[in-house]
Structures are given as structure tokens and as C-alpha cells.
Length: 274
Ligand code: ADP
Ligand code: MG
Image 1: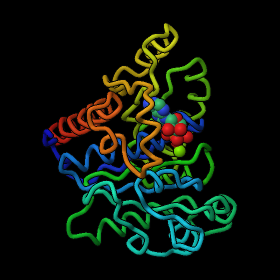
Image 2 (image 1 turned 90 degrees about the horizontal axis):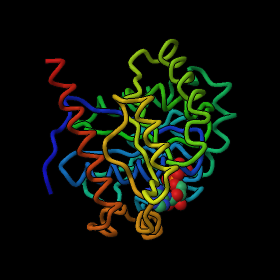
Image 3 (image 1 turned 30 degrees about the vertical axis):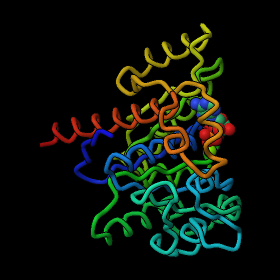
Image 4 (image 1 turned 180 degrees about the horizontal axis):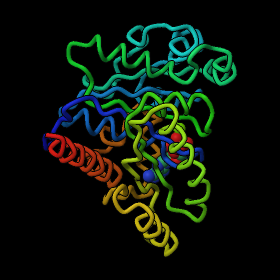
């Protein structure tokens, strides 16, 4: 496999879209796996009470285990809940448990409720000899305090968009939330990446939606489109990414290409800063 350029400093992505079922978790897991395989050190933080990213990475998330919930609500150091994935030696995961469902409410009364993930992640990265190259935060399908914590902890937003009729509906709400966060809580936050997912090339509609997204976000939309593929949806039940589940499949290929685009875009952004 081709070696990709590593970023000059940790790139922290939040994978957000308040719609469920658009490919957030699938994209977090497969992009992370693809980047780890090409030489990067990667962390996935599961911020969805469902814990689907944890499952897909082969990381246990029973309700009696410590998780990102304890980090957010009880100030447990992130290092205490980082687990190795079964997917790759360079890929770690902070699991979510069902307790996280209560965190939206519990966080409301806490000090610095929007900054809790940011503080924990910054402290963890500062304490590492060799920090992560990429962190992906997998968000729940809502715009509550968990997602806000992800927006505050991240530098980049990645929005997966499903190529279907209602794709752009609700997007303006997401965009104005990102703008609010940027103005009040995290001036560094940028929408850098849009990934078209579950594309069915046989339908005109999918092509129209893809074109419409590109027209709106020419600079952010990746060239690579993730096709709808059964292999992609089968992989998590084996605790695998689609890349280790079926390396040669179209889903694997497209997630590896999308990861390469993300890496190269970061490398050219690093160059501009030199
Ligand atoms: P979200 O995290 O946004 O709720 P998921 O990543 O869990 O969305 O995806 C929703 C469902 O669609 C899952 O069952 C997943 O396996 C399936 N899925 C995601 N991407 C694809 C794809 N490219 N092809 C086929 N099924 C997919
Ligand atoms: Mg999900």
C-alpha cells in the first residue's frame, strides 16, 4: 500500500451530520482504518451512545466499563479509556457506552460543559511521546451538547452526505451551528471536508444530488464518492473495517482513495503555512 504524507501536527476531525444513517460511523471507522494502514497513528473517539464505532473497531463497550462518558462527566483522563482496536496496531479507540445517552442532560449543569472533551483531548495529546496524526470524533445524530463538545475539540468538520433526495435539507442548520461555534467557542473550526456516501450510480437522482453538493461546496467536496455496497454494511458485524473485511471491494477502494485525498490536502495546507 502507498505511504501517505503525515500531517505536521494532529488533525482533529469531527464527523457530523444531525441526520442518522448517512454514513458518519462508517466513514469514521473506514477513513481511520485506511489512514492507519498507510502509516498514520489514529484515534477514533466514539461519541454516540449507540457505540457503533466501538463495535466496528472490535472494542468492548459494556455498560460496566469506563468510557468517554466518564471523561466528559467525571474528568477521568482520556488515557484511562483509550483502547487498542483489533483493526490495526496504529488505530486506537475511545469507546462509548449507553451511559452517554444521559450525558446530554448531565453536562448541562457542569462547569465548562462545552469544553470538556477539548480539555481531555488536549491534555492527552500533550502527554504523548508520539501524538496521533489523526483523531476522528464520531458524533451522534443530533446537535446537542455531545456534538458541541466534538465541535469545540476539533479543528476540522467532515460532513458525510448521503446521495438522496433530502440530502441538503437540514444542512443549513448544521452550517449555522458550525458558524456559531466558530464565533463563540472555537475560532479554529473549519468545514474542510464533505464526503458523498452511499452513492448509487444507476439513479439520476444520486448524480443530481452529488452535483448540487459540489456546486455548493466546490472546495470541500472530495473527488472520491463512496458507492453503496453490501460489503461496507457487512464489515462492522465482523468487527472489521471494509478494508480488512474485503480489501479489493469497491467500498474498500473508495475509502482508501478518500483517505488519500484527505492526507494530500492536509499536506498541501501544511506547505502553505511554511
Ligand atoms: P450514521 O453513523 O450516520 O448513523 P452509519 O455509518 O451507521 O450512519 O450508516 C448507516 C447504515 O448504512 C449502516 O447500517 C451502515 O452499515 C450502512 N452503510 C453506510 N455506508 C454504506 C455504504 N457505502 N454502502 C452500503 N451501506 C452503507
Ligand atoms: Mg453513527
